[in-house]
Image 1 (cartoon, rainbow, N blue to C red):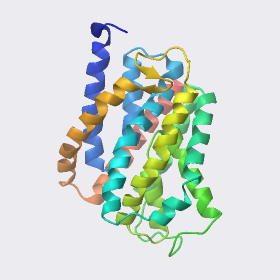
Image 2 (image 1 turned 45 degrees about the vertical axis):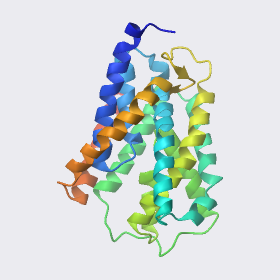
Image 3 (image 1 turned 135 degrees about the horizontal axis):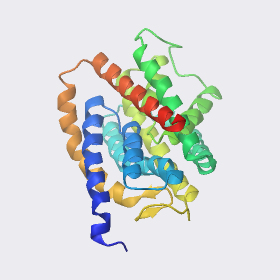
Image 4 (image 1 turned 60 degrees about the vertical axis):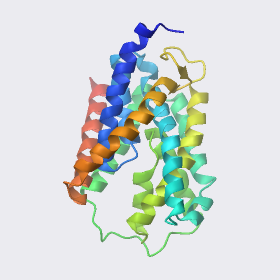
Length: 273
């Protein structure tokens, strides 16, 4: 067991990261995965975590934090009857399957490769947000299988490789097929459950016995970060939400897109230089 003074800088850095992540999550209305991963990556780097496992640890820890928040969110949305339960039932195999495939890819990929994957996906999502138009539609209702199953698997793979709950991806899918943004957001909370739980298990397995991990880690999950950030992000997110009310939906969308572009460019630069 490490001495308290040895882990004190780790605790302070994570608390600061939790405040920032909570504010940004509240400001942009995002579950936090796309925000937590780059924050974790930089904080773990400042604390001297081995670069070979740093990105893996950021992804796994982010998904672990999403488990309780997505379960809580899903319960609240389901009580209001806003969730598309039929879609979630149809994805009960597809999304977890995709997430487990992502953890297998992550287990074999290098930190550099994972950063590039995150940066590319983040850049594509950012461009979609910047050039998004409310009039864009692919259909009046969700597609049938096998396309729907493949989409669910794809959402699981991309989300697992980004350490996110899949909200941005599922919202895009459902609104392109005529569903309201309110139903899409509510259903995304359930998608987050289908992603985060198998993702948690997969990243524990993928990092089991790896060297270079910081104290209180099981595989690629750092439980100290999980324990510290869940209450901090829940406490600070409402303050970010207050700031959000001063901006329009479009300003928030573009703001989050620019945040993703900035993170993507940072990750590209870290690979090149």
